[in-house]
Image (tube, each protein chain N blue to C red):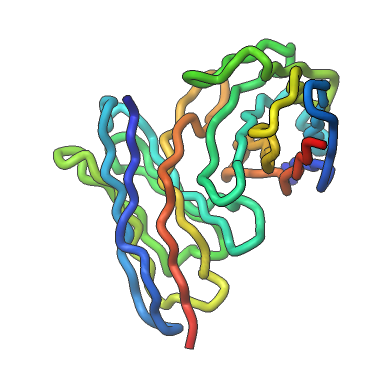
Length: 120
Length: 110
């Protein structure tokens, strides 16, 4: 059974940092691209970042570019999101997602999410 | 620019069928999408991948009450024999140069 378990969320002040982690199990983690998706309270889903299977290629939404860094440790089956210079508008539930490819990329598994609150 | 457009809300009666729509922006009518369900106070769940020819692949454990179809730039999710637990937000998703989500449709089961 595919499982994605996020951790590391919490409450911080603007300008501070947090590091999210996602523990993956039930599939060959090193074979899959992984994405982070977030959802602000009462709002829709927004794509944040992606990383390819060996960690050599990453991309980011414009809203987080230069502040967030996605990485992975395939030996530990773990995905990370380092979030620096956090802003109030980064407040959201952050979801770790597995991505599959069949003529196009699509999310096929979601974690349960971890809440990040940025407030002064 | 790649954009997915969804109606904000829909409703249908218990036991009936409902068809939700996701519209791809101009120039992107060949794109595949995925449908995701988010029940209240829960994380999203992948329902299916839907291609431009209407072929679709459901996720693990997704009942065949959920089906997909396509016409031009429109991608549809049909839910038949509506149950109370189908009351949820439904999002479409695709990929261009970045991930793209529709704004979501809130389905109310009457």
